[in-house]
Amino acid sequence: MFKTKPKKILLNFIIILSIFLADRLSKIYILRIAEVENTVDIYLNSYLNLYLIWNKGIAFGLLNFDDSFIYNIISLIISMVTIIVFIMMIRAKDYEIYALLCIFGGSLGNLFDRIYYSAVPDFIDLHINNFHWFIFNVADIFITIGVICLIYVEIFYKNRKYEKNF
Image 1 (cartoon, rainbow, N blue to C red):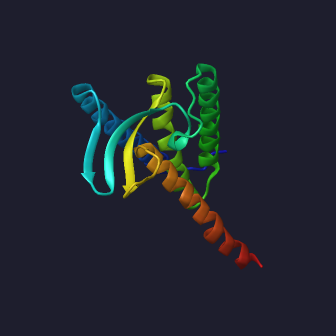
Image 2: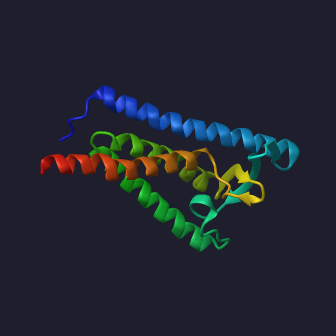
């Protein structure tokens, strides 16, 4: 049934764990600053600030509601999507696996926060002049990289394999 080698499984686990730990450590660091200072509003350079917000919605603060019923529904949907990504990861071949590992590791980081804190701490504020992108965290970075890589694999890599067959 599973033809994956133990070394491959271990490598995949290490990648997921590394992403999860990078996310957790960055959030713990920001939350410790918030404990001491009562706020996090750190100017790093003209393009990047650290500013703590609590996100009860989905990626980048979308669908952010204070209602606990809606929050629980969104959390349930995110949990199901995380399970689907895990199943896709098990079935993935070639380069898709690495994109799915990024998505899964980031998703686990944010899912942990949703369960533990009942919100996800977002703190990376990327901006140019007065245009601010959504505030995000390290898990969101990995999820975004994974999605971009999946799109790339789908458009370019699989398209080439399809053209070779004809």
